[in-house]
Amino acid sequence: MSSSTTADAPLAETDIARLREDFPILHTQVNGHPLVYLDSGATSQRPFAVLDAEREFAATLNAAVHRGAHTLAAEATEVFEDARSTLARFIGAGDDEIVWTSNATEAINLVAYAFSNATVGRGGPAAERFRLGQGDEIVTTEMEHHANLIPWQELAARTGATLRVIPLDDDGALRLDENRITARTKILAVTHVSNVLGVINPVDQLVAAARDVGALVLLDACQSAPHLPLDVRALDVDFAVLSGHKMLGPTGIGALYGRRELLEAMPPFLTGGSMITTVTTTQAEYLPPPQRFEAGTQRVSQAVALAAAIDYLSEVGMPRIAAHEAALGQRLVDGLTAIDGVRVLGVGIDLPRVGLASFDIPGIHSHDVGQFLDDRGIAVRVGHHCAQPLHRRLGVTASTRASTYLYSTEAEVDAFLDGVAATIDFFGVRS
Image 1 (cartoon, rainbow, N blue to C red):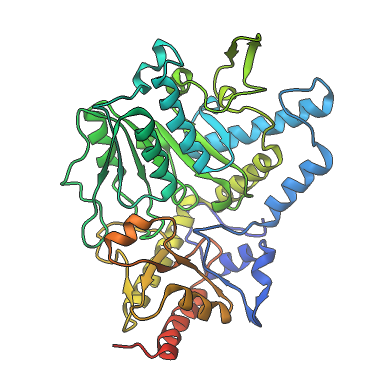
Image 2 (image 1 turned 90 degrees about the vertical axis):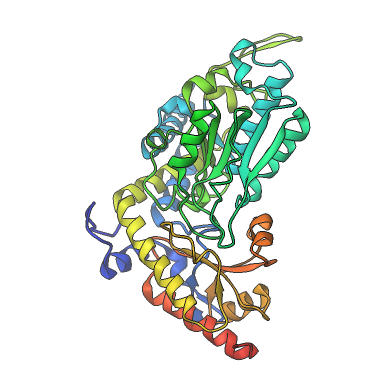
C-alpha cells in the first residue's frame, strides 16, 4: 500500500490521493472523461495488492486444497486456511466459524436449506432447533435485498412455515413498533445496512427482540463489512454473510459466519467430495464444520485475494474508512436535497448512514439519469437494486444510486451533484 496513514487519524485528501494510486482502474477514462466511480455498493474496485495476490497464488502455489499430500498442495492448503483466519479476525469470529461460499446469496441459501434438511429429518436430534413446520414463523423486513428475502419465501413454501415481514414507514425506516417477532419466530433475517437507503439499522434492538423469544438471527453484512468495523460477537448475531467483491476482493468468493455450536448441529446444504469422512454406497458421514459446508473444489485463489483485501482495509483502518464515508454520504444527501426536483429516498430517517444515497427525479427514468451521467464518465447504479418491495413501499419503481468507498473523493461527489443538476436542466423537469 502506498499510503502512510495511521490507525486513528482522519483520512485527509493527501491520504486518499495516495490510496487512489493503488487502484489502476481509477485512472481510466470513460467517454473522454476521467472515471468517477460511484457504484462501489454494487462492486468495489481492486488495489494492486489484491490483483497481485491472486496472480501470485496462481503462478506459484496453484493446487487443490485439503486433497493432495505433495508439497504444493500442502502449501496451497496453508494459505487457504490462513485466508480463513484473516477473515475470522476481521469480523471477530473463530476460524472454524467461517464457511467459504461463492457469494452472500449462496451463504443465505446455505442456512435456509439447512433448515429445510433438518425439517425432513436430516441432522438428528442436534438439528431440532432448525426444524420448521406449520405454525412456525420466519421474519425478515420490507427493505431487504432479494437475496435475503427469496430464500426465506422458498423455505416457507417448502416447510409450511409462515413468512412475516417487518414493514417500513413512509421514509423507509423499519417500523419496530409493529412487532413481527413473536414466540413463533424461529429465525430473523435482517440487513445491517440498506443497499438502497444507506442507513445503518438498529441491529441491537432487533437482536434483543429475537433473543427474548429464542429466535436465531442472520445478519446480511454485505453493505456493512466493507464500510464499518464489524464484530459479530459484539452484535450477538448467530449468522452473518458477506461478499468479497464489495470489499476490494474478487468476484466468486463470499462467506458465512455461524456460531460454532450452530454449525456443528446444522445438516449440510451441498454434498459431495471434501466434506465427508466415510462413504459407502448407501450412506455417508460428514466432516465437522466448516469443511462440512465446503463440498467440491474450493475458491482458493479468490480466498487468498480476499485476505489481501482485508489486510488492505485493516491497514487503512475501518474506523477511518467509516468516518470518511459517513462524511461523503452526508455530502451526497445534502447536495441532492438542495437540487430542485430531486427526491432522496430515506432522507427523513434519523439513523447513521454509510456513503450511499438513492434518489428519484419525477419525470425522468433512472435509466436516463444513469445514461446522462455515464456520458460524463460518472458510474452509478440504476434500477430497483434488487429491492423491489422497498421501492414499491416508497412509491417508485426505480431509483438512481451513488455509492462511495475509501477511494472516493469530495470532488467526485461534487462532480456527480453537478451532473444530476445538469440532468434536470437537460430534460427540463424542474418544478
